[in-house]
Image (cartoon, rainbow, N blue to C red; front, side):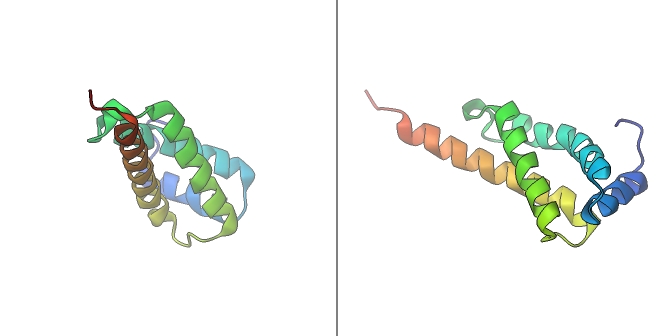
Length: 102
């Protein structure tokens, strides 16, 4: 969705929050590049699979939107980024715990 203004993305998110499934899909398409960037360029990029965690992040975002636990379209972006960072941190911790010291 390159070339889409921030205002348009906020309208898409608002429609998704109102229950519009088409807007929900468009919202996920708009969020995906940012979530992927957070995961690829974050501090834990060596220990995570960014594609898998992107899917998991977007799944959590869509669940929260459907449950209406996010009430402000502008908060969806921050929620997605924070969720991605938290999932990456959890995955990195898991990998580090599983490494054996020889």
